[in-house]
View 1: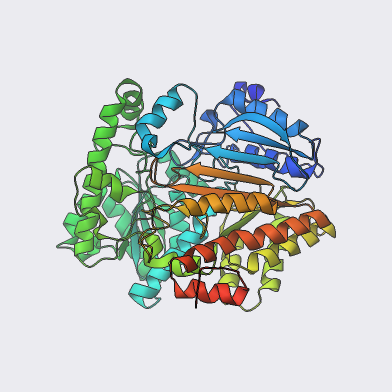
View 2: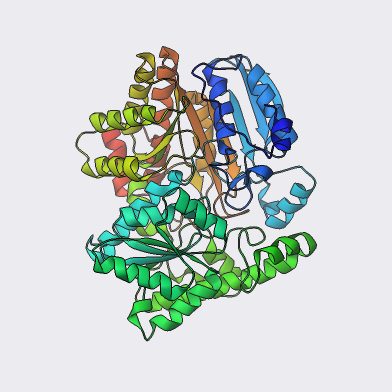
Length: 564
């Protein structure tokens, strides 16, 4: 089906499940084609009609004409050619070599002085740019599963730090059940805690129920808390979606929690799309219909009202923080938005990376993921077993894989997220390639990751917040990561700006590499899956983290300026 035909048929785009490639160059171009289409699968994308994958306006292609040209180009690309994509628009094809990336992507990048939402929106209106988020415009989004394990690791570490690892009988308050926030309820119950998630879109709540990421829904706060209380009496954890506005529900909870412990959460975070106040956050007192109309008629009024509402929500989070409750920003830049709206104490509570995740980043551990191009779930289950075989002495990892198989419903092409580090990633990649070669998998697999990784992002309010040497805003590191992945032979490489936290606040890179069972793929996999996480160890060792320095020594990295 052509892209234009797909548009006429309500944009039902799905990746092929055929066991042989349809493209001229074989699997190395079939893979990006399928993953692009998978991003727009109705079971995956938040708004496929508008090419929006997740995160407010994070898109897979600039418009439907660009989508169609990307598809046509990938179908006809030669094995020694590389397609260049500029903010969702295919702009050139160049002769390179077989080990070079088949696709190079740059999304939403602006010269720093002009790197604002205002300037971006001007360009967007002219059709000159799109917002790629992180994995939307880099064609490796796998649905909410893509963030489940990172969220699970965060909640589990919060439990270890604050509750001696005992999350039973505890409940977490959060906002947002969109493409990224939708992972929170399942991650919480996997970690043993209950969750109350406030969401303003009924369709988001229903999708999380349908995909089993969410257990129950509630119409009122008291009903939601009664469901949680009843589950705790039975020794169970439960997740509840509450239809409402976080800017209204959070203050209500903060006020009532002062005098009634039933309203007192055990931890608080948020994953609304607060990074984009125009498109991602519903002002308090507004209906969804009013917001949609006002975005067209008076966008500045929407932004102003949303910023005030974000400030109100953060003020409620601060009141809960002042009660001694663990509160943390989960990477949507909500604190920065509140600060700009006038809340001077917005950064009194920490972000999740410095609070809970940085020791993992120091060892190159991050969101490794793979997808089965066959579309057969059994291919993923076989790879799950292979990972457990290759890493036999990690019960935490084995527990995650067991829970993932039991509780995570695939969206689009079957896929798995699994946080692995330097050394482990290359070992697993080579083994998966061998499985393809031996016919143990029905078709090749692609290996990628989130841009939220140890060496691929500069984001001073998120991944690089509070770096030991003060290098939070240095964005040389994701640029070096992207360049090295190109030199190493990744199948496609992307360099983005503004993902997760909004324009002006981050730069980050992504890579995907194909396991097609060939010796050439094995060589590329070993280089890419070693070098990519090694840049994270390098970045943290350079910043002075002892854990990273020790990891670099153990893994034999050559870091000229790092001394033990």
